[in-house]
Length: 315
Image (tube, rainbow, N blue to C red):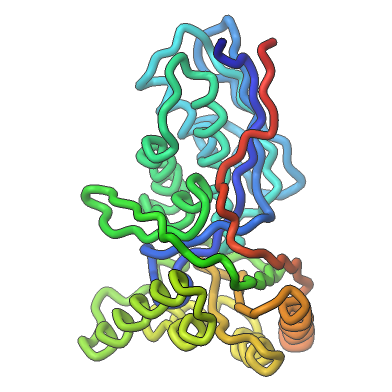
């Protein structure tokens, strides 16, 4: 029997991982967004939102979760309507895949209600449309790991080809989110339209090194290759105290440190949670000292599950 209501959790994600702009991302345990979907007799989509954050669109047309759900209903035309509640736990412009988590939560919840549910991978084409709605670019490096779990490599966008990397999940990821906002579109607008071949070669080598480091669980290789010579230099100015925070992380024992997504969140890597806690404290102190900014800190291994059903009900 198909379920009549469902609650789904979609986790945050770290994208780019240094040099892997738009092609590398991984899921973390928290934060994340929730979506609750319920079948209704009235056709169409009824959308609502519950959040403590400012600036979150409340209409189905403008919110990425409502947009993605509408696309799915238009295509599959189920013999019922859907009441969709987005519990928006993540602020916009965090650099942790906030719009991606909303899109994934909505798509995964609605999928459970469909007469014939799709595979998770078949939902990718819908959730990237949420990213197109949010930033003008259907990038998949946040939505793919949030949906599928683990670390993902986007081999191609035309056609979309996502590879789940068989990583050795031993590395601890420290994420510090300073309470400032960086709009994804603004962060994309500053990107260079052409780069020197020497920079491209260095970046390609680092992307390959990050991938190899993830596969082997080699934190030294990974740390050495979390070097972005193209995007980080132009986006760092959006993050108050960026240089000092990065230096504080490395001085505290991090093997590598860079910007998460389009920022302002920053991530670092460590061997253990104890080391990760010390690194996170050093980064928070640097943000406070050099930018007078309060922060949230998350410490996580890679979340290998991605979008997860919290509960289902038949009534």
